[in-house]
Length: 147
Image 1 (spheres, rainbow, N blue to C red):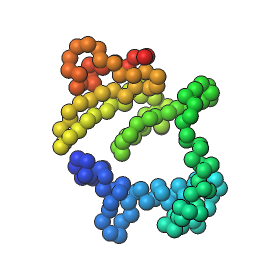
Image 2: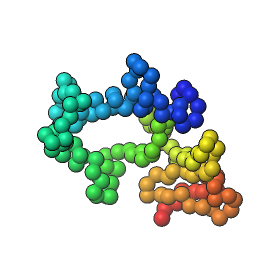
Image 3: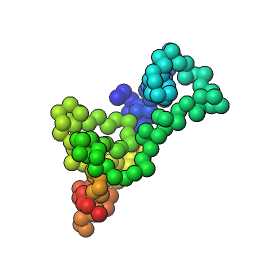
Image 4: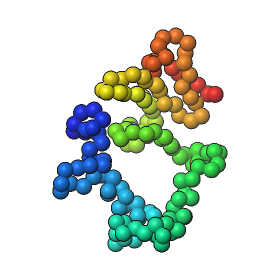
């Protein structure tokens, strides 16, 4: 991604110089046209979305990702895969293209360009546990363990 630090990563997502279009605009437009109302509406102009009349039409799609049941056994039995991660630059090429799931995902807390803390993100239900030696700010001193 062009740019450096946090500013460079956010620019293409939420703000671009004219006449460019932020990536988030494309996400929103695609959502409303092809997912939001349960059936495709390729001509829907999401800029005229009316909360009073259109919000109720979104209820079916809102229920789809609603995590109300923690039992993922049927999903796992079908070979389902979940990556739960918040980040704008998190390409998992080996997993998506080669089927090689990562053992962990690296996470960092960066302030003013300086990394303050790192941790491994572990596949559910495992969690990162401190090994008891070394800095608690370094991912190398954590291991994924079952709670």
